[in-house]
Each structure stands twice: as C-alpha cells, then as structure tokens.
Length: 156
Picture (tube, rainbow, N blue to C red):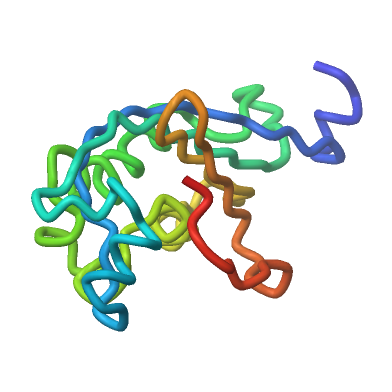
C-alpha cells in the first residue's frame, strides 16, 4: 500500500450503483388541473407512470491500512437496502412514501430524499447521490442546498 494511504492521508471516492423501480405522478396541490397539465405534461397522468431508476451513491474516506478499503461494500449495500431500496422499490412514491405525500415526487426531490436517508452512513462520508430516471435524464445532489437555484419549471 502506498505510504500516503497507510497514514490515512489519501481520500478515495467510491461509487456504487443500485437499481429500483417506482411509480409517481407529478402533480402539485398548489396548481389547478390546467396548470398541472401545462407544467408537468404527460408526467401528470392521473394514473401515474413508472421508471426503472439507477441510483449511484458516492462515498469518501481514508483508506483503512488493514483492509485497503474506505468502507466494506457489504456494509454499504445493507445500509442502502434498508434505507432506500426496501422503502422505495416497487412503490407508488405519491401514495406509499410519506416524504412525498405533500411534496411533488420529481426526481430532483427524490435525489434529496435519498441523500437525507443515506447521510448517516457511519462508515464513510456521503459525497452525493445521482439518480438516473431515463437514458436522457439524471439528477445529482450533494447535500448543499445553498448552491441550488429554485427551479423555474420542469426540465422534462
């Protein structure tokens, strides 16, 4: 192992991918039916629609000289399974996930929710989460709301 890593002077970032499926309807209680239709388009379908999401979790930390790792993948996998996959996979985000009862379940908001669920991972620092919604759309959140600008409308 390099000398810098042995004394904990090297920070490494690890990315791990997960998959889950969920449905949602983009609909805001503050908008009229017409405004919801205009803002969210086909994503405002009253019956909802689903996605096969790809979640990428990035964590960082010092390399443990004994293991050569920043975190054990089994520990990370178990944490993500309990905090994110079990409560979200094959669920209606609007109807079955409390965080989205009063919040529009856009993928932007989903990123923030997932970050909040994972930030207490005890073995390494959560750097960011990225959620790929479609082959064209992905969203990333690093937990620093000070740098986010309020959206003027959906990007879909």
